[in-house]
Length: 108
Image (cartoon, rainbow, N blue to C red):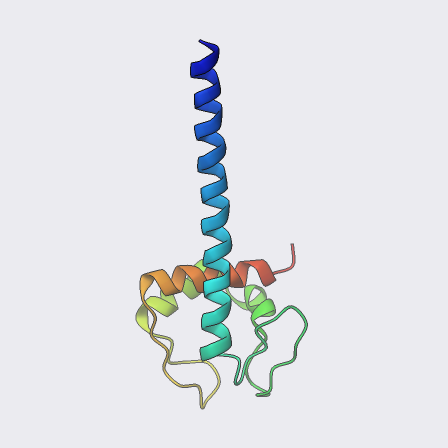
């Protein structure tokens, strides 16, 4: 019985560690995506400033839109924003990673 309880505890611990590692990888992937595709105009970090005057910092986007609403915009292909913003299309995996990263920037 003790062996079975120990095995269940170990399995739960490993699943928790794998979930945590996956979440960290998702956030890192999202950060890399926004640094590559968005940082030219938007502030994509915790304290940087947007280089484009009409491009809001990612850390303030939740003040304008719920993050889940941004997910829908990404699915449809973001083509609005500041006037010279290029159209941005992302896969569902990329969208999830971007939203996960953006969530880490929002004030709690």
